[in-house]
Length: 284
Length: 292
Image (cartoon, rainbow over all chains, first blue to last red; front, side, top):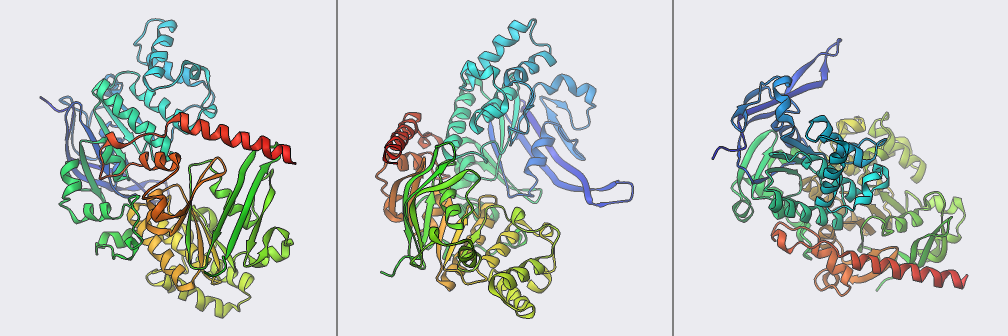
């Protein structure tokens, strides 16, 4: 079976604003240095790393929100790394993103129902306004929201409800591939658990193919099949969650796991010296 | 046991429209003790810290209760007396260090100003002390870091600088309000290590406000679990976390994802539980209203 998404030596650069010249032109700074990744249908992959590791940049490149600076990227066999926006348009609806902050990614001036209906309109999937509304109500039900939410505005919703809208919008067009970027990190423990269980149910129901970006290994562990560990733009480890968490191969992964404070009482935890990892010193 | 540094008795905080933010909270912290205040947003955990610091949000006021610091009633002090304690005997480590540092002044001036104003030090002495403090919070090469601007530092460095500033006056009480929430786990660990080392050296008491039960389990000897402005469970961390009695504490633990357990064991807090707790809290308000 061909993988849904395949990256080979994927490199991503962004303009380095610190070194822009008089005309605002900036040198390119490489953030992601050659990543190989193959994602099968129905697979949920966790992308973990510290801030600055390039996990968000990689996630955005996977669905071509940013153009890779090198390497290959195939979506269902189509080479999309260098594809023009025009050729990419029919594929856009099949690759979606759920953003970290649902508040800033929703238009505050239109109701969430209109926001969701817009997806159907833009991609011309439905014939009439009534059909669009019906599909939107189905969508609200799918993410566990009641129909009243349809006419609400983003500021009237709680953080958890907004994130459900973010999920609904990404799933509206039944995409083949979704990238979720830190979607539970700003939420309370109880809301976070609700969103995680919702994603678990959705993945079973819809056979979702998902790249789940998070800095929190505990969250990745409960949701993902496979984990990819990034450090300063390089993949340092990749493998099934069961294996990686039981016996991490890379010292960096070990350091990340050891740094998680589990809710088990241990007042000597802080007295243990962290492993001497040069990169950790740099970011400290 | 020695007298508590801070003792809060039946603290109630009310908004101008009559809604209650805190519904009678009692907490006391002994010298050298780290006490965790844990709860979700809206539980009122930050309000306790803000009441001590005298910086309640607009419209909120103390309705009832006592806050005793070192035997003195904080709520009966005048502004000048209260201010004299702040930054010296009582210090805050805030959540967001970037918001708390002046973006257009070098670290040196911010630290020196603090020490001249709050501790009455001379400039030269203050500069020496600032470098010494930065060294204590394990900042490499403090002589050059001190001349940087806040935006030139990483989040972990900024938070360590605020820890250094908080400990400048050898405070008796530190209020740490989610100090590591914005940091990566590895950085969180080193920042917590620095915080606890400083706390042990100074023998300060710490009120550690957090939503993370994991951090509480590694840091605090005692913990208070808050919900809807009420204390649901309070006691030694070894008891509260290891064998919680209140159903809410149990639900909170079950809703915390852990890498050593599968998703099946993760259970969101039942809505019926939080709803009945809110209903209970509101019934309590009627009782308070009837009293006044």
